[in-house]
Image (cartoon, rainbow, N blue to C red; front, side, top):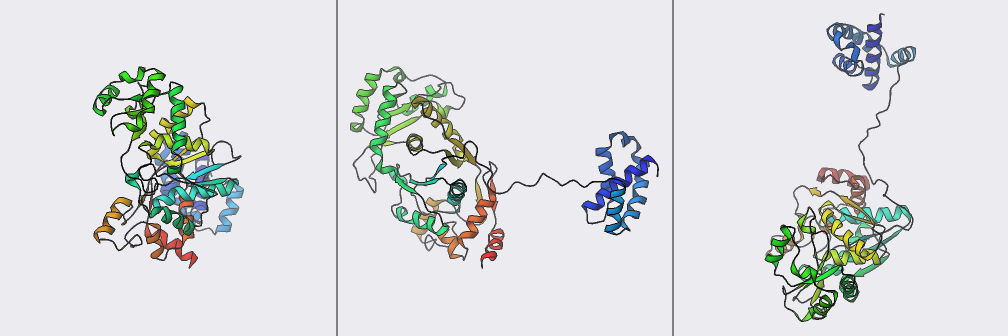
Length: 397
């Protein structure tokens, strides 16, 4: 064989090895053109040669092909670009791993909640860490009282047991203490501007007049806060007033809420916003890693300002994409409306995406746990099909 024929022969052997002994002339030419740039000018000449050589190689047995590969020193390299599946290593230190699952008690858990609960539980198991269940119930409008019992039941079904359980509605005095500390540091201020005025200033990267109030003035307003009407004032955390994202500029930490809380009644009127209570609790509870959806990217950035003001270590923030599922409703509020109107028979109606509804279909909890673990934690969105779920479920039946 001349030099060209030998090169074609090697590429044909390699192609045959990758396709169970059957090489393809077109694929062989494509391989030569991509890996042998000096031969691109001889493409017309290479074509007929490739056809003859491939026909010859495909008549050989696999043992004969292997012998020819050894003779011509053809080595099949494994494709290392495998699709990444499962939970990758946590970033940062793996010592004293503390993570949390922190649902809002607006209803029972659905498969979207499992997207957060399962990786947190699995990472803690992997690194011998601690898992905290924190019920984030600082918005009474979003609290569905039976959910206080339904959420632990759903976690038990998944086989997840928290090491510690907290209710944010028990922690208001803690939030008040840290709010005062922020004011005393000059890192937060009481804002009495109406919402429209503040938005106009914020959108134009201009501070509101309240931002320059003295610490004494802010403390005076803070002490009167619980006597004010809703909308009369808010407590704001100072950030970069020129930040590229207007939503991050001087975000609200505390506001007045006049709703009755299922656990607190009307004991409190000053309620923390999510970003404030979450950041305080994540610090005090010693979170090493915070796993949350990518829709919280801006919230993570907001909370970093609070960490910086207080001189706290920032946990490792990990964000994941949304979970989509065919033909089922994942909205808790819409599910509740449907149950109230009689459209759905209850939280376990098979048309819903709640864990109770999935269990009623005969799906085993280990199926959901393994599926979520297999999907892993990645920024891209993931779609789940019933075909995939039932296929995995058959392994347990």
